[in-house]
Amino acid sequence: MQMTATSRGILALVVGIAVFSLQDVILKLLSGDYPLYQAMIIRSLTAVPLLLIIVRVLDGRLTTITTPNWALMLARGFLNFVAYTAYYLGLAAMPMADTVALFFTAPLFITLFAAFVFKERIGPTTLFALLAGFAGMLMIFNPSDSVFDPAALLPVLGAFGYALTQLATRVLGRTETTAAMTFWGNLTFLASALALAAVFGSGAYEGATHPSLAFLTRGWQEMPLRDLLLFMSCGLITSIGLSLLTYAYRVAPSSSVAPFEYSFIIWGVLWGWLFWEQLPTELAWAGIGLLIGAALLVVRAEAQNEKAAPEGAA
Image 1 (tube, helix red, strand yellow):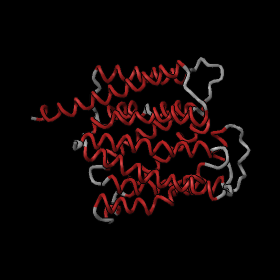
Image 2: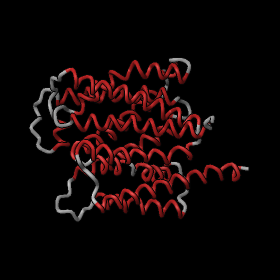
Image 3: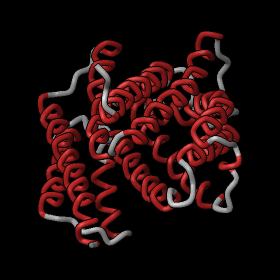
């Protein structure tokens, strides 16, 4: 039985999300021994030749990485760097499932920002979804808990930055290819990580006891071959995952495949349980469910708006 294009897209996205989740496992496992910038430098250097291959395959030529919009490309890449730095720093201190779930507030921020920047209308369904989603976020936070960790704010900051990155992507996407934007994003990651290494690499600021702060300020560490290969594998994971996600959105409607990005939370729960014996609290489970439901409502409302747009234009 031959698979439809939509089925192939969904399968590619689900596999791509599973591959991406392995990077989070590696970074969390090694976050107690190395600084984040060291992981980013090794990952980005490994990814450069792989991403050049992806650009060549997807775009048919390498010249697409040359662009007059280099300043905006760098700005987008830096926003993405800040977003994922905040996310990974949160991951070092928090249960994996909670961190992933809070980062997936990004679609809610994207909807809000699009309303202000692109003047997109927020209908009653979307407004309800936004309120429900942020309520779910508060349930995961559980601010009444006497041991509330401010690190819980980091994945939300990451989601905020990621939402801004996606707005920049929408603007750049009118003239630039996905592969080219990813290549420039990786270069910005590398340059930004090297800047952090210049500040913290000597170890002058290490000694922090909080896992997130230690992951940021720890000095450059010597590493055995096993750990080096694990960090290098993150570059391979990024390249494979990106290829699968790009393929998914090229062959299938975004409204059909986007909801399956939330399978990442399933992997977050599974890896958190297998590697760290961590499971969300009952309140966090309820918050995760509310957050996923709210985000799916936003995706559904956007899909309906896309279908209605041609009719309105006519």
